Image (cartoon, rainbow, N blue to C red; front, side, top):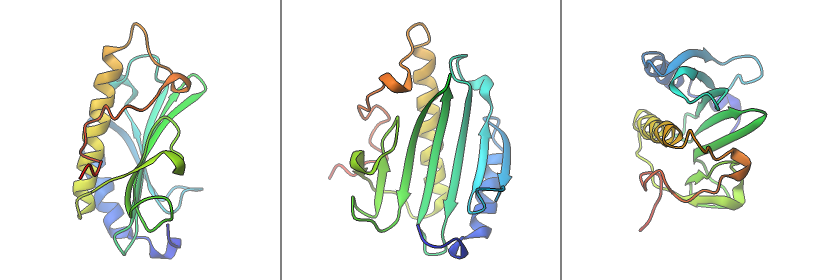
Length: 162
C-alpha cells in the first residue's frame, strides 16, 4: 500500500459507520493506536461457535482507490485470516485475494472487485457471513486454522475466473 498520508479518511469513516450499524459488529475503532491507517471492527463473538475466541475486520482505503480489507478469527492461540486487496504488486493483478488461513503472497489469487469501497465491503461481509455459517455446520468436528486448506468454498465473487 502507499503512504499513510494517502489515506482516504472520509471514505473510511463512511465505511466505519456502515459497520457500526450492523448487529454483527460489536465495536468500531477509527485509526486506533498502532493501526492509524485503518478502521478496526471487532465482531460480536456470539455469532460464532464457542471454538472461535475473537473476530475482527480491518479496513484501509487510499485516495487513489487502492484498499485492503483483512478478516481475522482467533482460535485458541491460532489465527484464521484472509484479505481482499487492490493495489499494484508483483505477485498478482491489482485486484487479488489472499486466501485463508494465513494470507501469503504465494497463495494469492487474482480477483475482480467492484469500484466503490461500499460494494467491496458488501462482498466482504457476505463472505464473512458464509464463513460463519460454515463454522456452525462443522461445530462437532471443527477444522482448526492449522488444519485448514482453502478450496474456494466462498463462491467466486472475489475471484476472476475468466
